[in-house]
Image 1 (cartoon, rainbow, N blue to C red):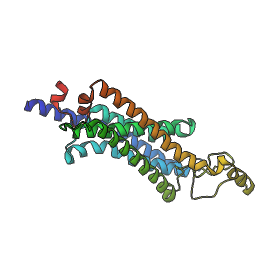
Image 2: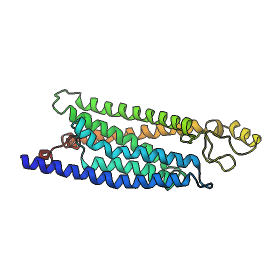
Image 3: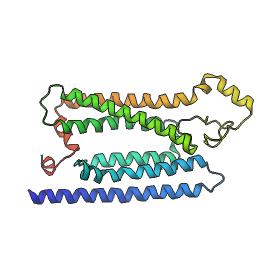
Image 4: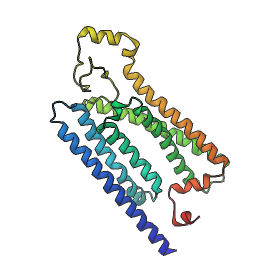
Length: 260
């Protein structure tokens, strides 16, 4: 039993090291790319700053895995680790560096949908594991509600982060700068818009103009809501199929759980 536990611990440590090294190398590449682009007159300075912020932030994801184990004694299943790291790559590498956010208009909505449902499911699994010994008949409902609350709380914190980044670093995460050729100034929210006063006034006189930034923020929340709806449906199906016991092992699982 002790040998099995030591093998499990060694395997988990190797997973953490490999995930950290591979993802960190990618984010270092993103960081260097952004630094170089800061001196490129043909590249958006605000986008370069945003990539720097995102690459630093996403590097924290693999660092959280060993921290959870040492501080909170929580071990994540490999599939959850890979999901979290992949989400960071979809955001920073594909979204910003490869400019999927600007090439595919649905990319931002897709990531907010994915994070809404994914974060809710992650919180649900945490609660499912934490209440494993509970005999309460409301255990499932409580876990579902906690997942929803955690997901929307994180969505609100993300919008605060976007607002703060726009104010402090001149980025355009909340789309206060319309991404239209005749108005777009490169995404620098600290600089005036391009175009004449008449063109600016004509744009913001229409609903598409004065609701431009609002539609982005509220669209993020709507996508998060849809993700949560899918999450609730999935958890109900799993509950009906009596799969909750196995699902709880994805958080804080042990060698015994694997053998089962």
